[in-house]
Image 1 (cartoon, one colour):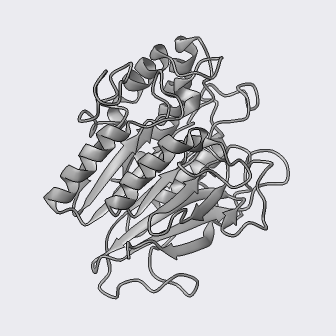
Image 2 (image 1 turned 45 degrees about the vertical axis):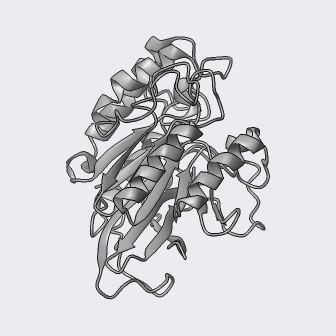
Length: 340
């Protein structure tokens, strides 16, 4: 364990909604955006904020009970390159950090999702070599993939997305992981495929549905046309599918801040982009549910079916990337996200 990392309990406390007295059925963690501001910033092959990444790995490994999954929602590395060999080095460097962490042997399953920094070239457009490099280097952490949309189809995709956007069932839940920047369709998700996938999941009788993607459908308020809101009609069509299928929440990153909202009621949009990339200068503390701290989000599903989202964090250092090891990771935000 990293020195100073704390043992975080999922048990109810005085600052969170009361959990089901019968206990937690399962939980999962979400975080994204750990890459540094530029490759040369820290001089590390992974281009990750190594200190914060190691701290988050250690904190999640110390959770009791342990979550079933950690979804790392993109921008693990800086990327943004035409050189897929450079991207390969960065991704392998990131994997080496994970494999050396206590999380790798904790029993928590790591699921990695691509962000625009992994799939985009220098022109900030998704390109096929980026997708191929991601699929090769992240293969051990996308083992549940394969049922997603292939090239062509109703979403008119340029490349095979079957292991970039996909879904799987776990206990009474259905998880949908989304590539929000497929080649030829940056800033979009395959809504036709999502529609069919969620209809099939509901027909099977799943009780909870969670979507995870790098770019949010509804971005942080100070950047209103970011994320999937780059194309509002397409965004609205996608969000309607989530709401119509009683999806509890979409979790994302991309905006370097913690933020949560219910854009149209019912389904939550939770941005957990506070993994270690410098907090966005546009973060506004007067906006409700804004969190300008490094950390991760933990989602718990209780035995009675209630669902809670908790954001754990530590203060961002005044200078540099690394939080002092004596700074505790504490509960910063808690809300019930059960579909009602």
